[in-house]
Structure formats: structure tokens, C-alpha cells
Image 1 (cartoon, rainbow, N blue to C red):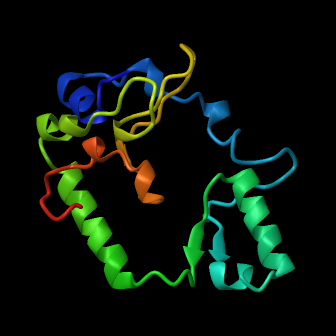
Image 2: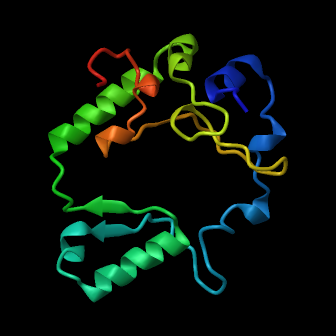
Length: 154
């Protein structure tokens, strides 16, 4: 599926069925049977992982199994750097669709600009466009997918 969310939203009156999750499926993939759902994304203290903290390792495992994601704190990345990444990302995603399509991912690859890879006709898709780039190791970077605009992206 090469239709980006921005295009679908501007050309459609109704949300395509492929993006609609059934009510009973809503939290099926992020909770285990018998566990209550918490609306708070798990927070993992990376500095504690470095000390082999058993409780933090258990929290990490639970976050991965039940949520598939977590918020990392005490990771050592400067807030100013993260702010810059957010700013440049917003600039990229606010570009016109034609500009973003210059970074369009290939059909059977995750790298580049696009949306969900379609693995089956029954797959429910996320209402999102993404830019996936390999940063390290450097020799695996596919620079043809790296945006030229915004100019400070690279």
C-alpha cells in the first residue's frame, strides 16, 4: 500500500475499512489474559538496566511483552538533542506529500518513508506515516531514503 495517510485524509470522505479496529480487538495485542489494562506507557530507567537491576529487567520484559514499547528515562541522551530531532521530524512531516515521496520506501522494505507494510489482506493498518532510517552501523545506511529537505536533516 503506497497511499500515505496525508493523501488518504485529503482525498477521502470516509475512513477506509483497513484502518478500523474492531472494539474487541482494541487492546488484544497489548495485554495478557487476566491482567488489567493500565493506560500508562511503562517507564524504564535505563541507568538501572546497566546495574543489572532484577526489578527493572522484569519491568522491561513486561513492557515488551504487554505493550511492545516503553518510555526510557536516564538514557544519557541530551534533552537538547532530542528537541532538535523532534523539530526536524516535524519539519519533514509537514512537507508537501510530493517532497516526502522522494524518500518513499520500496515495496518489500521497511526503510524509507511510508506506512505499514501490508503482510495480509486482513491486516488492520495504523493511521500513521513513518520515516524509518538505519543510523548505525554507518555501512548499513541507505542514504537514498534520507531526506534532502529539511536541509539540516542529515
